[in-house]
Length: 515
Image (tube, rainbow, N blue to C red; front, side, top):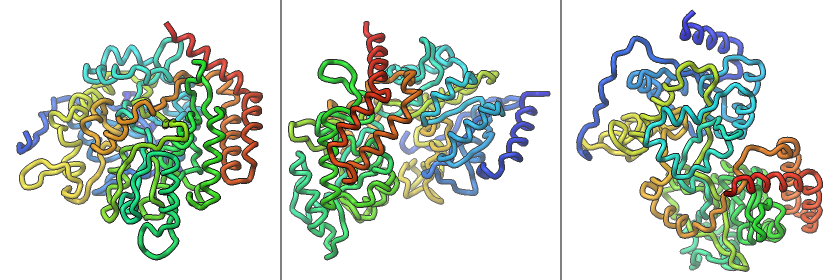
């Protein structure tokens, strides 16, 4: 039986068995795609997909049937076939069930979740470092060389088992977004210190900054429902004002790695956040907020500040035409400390199964995206699909979303790697100038997690327990349900329940990497 026929039968059986869980699935010159080589049959790459909230479709398309998949097949001779798709919140569970029953391991899995480590440990996916060296284009290799630390978490005994999905520099570092029209109405300037920040927070909460005559605003949105280290509605910069970044490993004063959440500065940060909640400067429902709820509070004018990534200026803030806002540098703490959660230029990874017969076809697909789309050259100079993410206006190519017939669609969401292809350093010239300036003005404040290896033995055994202890204790302290002194008890328990051993393990890993 041919490979394609086998895959079609397997996919059909999976669809019938799991239908309930799966979804239905030159500036003025016209850009012409190059002619497609003649071929007998496209090569089928099987994969699985997560439907994310920011995915938009038009013309009746789905993740399984869309303009990008048609392009890949027609242009490159690569047919991307989804075995199943589910909402992103169910993806990890679904994939674990499939692997546990050894059913239809896809050729390629791309994901941004912590399940990557489980997938590597499953033994179903092959070593990819040698494939990358053999098949990746020079453009892709040079992009990867900009920061080779991106490989660390996916390396086992010197071998690489997942290809990092590159992202732009500082892609998830938080900046502080602030309503400048509110500042102007109150006659205030952007805050540069903690004292100035709290003065602005009081003005945003009690000074009627929106001018509607009602007491219906708060100062700062925090997504505490997602913990203190959240991509949107982040709190790590608050801890940074006191010399630590929580939920990650930082270099201590003695040169050893220390877990940021047990650093003494974390106690001071919790005290400040506790005060803000008590004074009403932060919405009372913050403990229930995730990033989506926090950003919505900012969009709706319920709060005047939120910490989140630089790309929020495009989405979800792109439609805020009636508000004036911008990113500002993070304020300094009492002793001048400024720090934020830093980010490697990586956002997930790609795994290739042991059963994929011709992995070079995946590289053919991804190389083309790096050599064109990532460089903004050739037939993908303006975007991935005409009349989806770019169009002609007045006879000239335009990337203005407002001018796309039928509405703008981010086609990069349909690619195997979520963003098409990105070269980390190009953000400096392609990013929004305000956010580029702000992030680069505080480069030293970007604290990247200094432990980049695979989970240690004790992390695997005790990590969930310690994480739950931290989240519950911090939440209870911030909301005044536990006294501030409970932080000291938390540190002792964290150390006794495995944190002390984990500290030794991560420092042993760090020592092993030193010349």
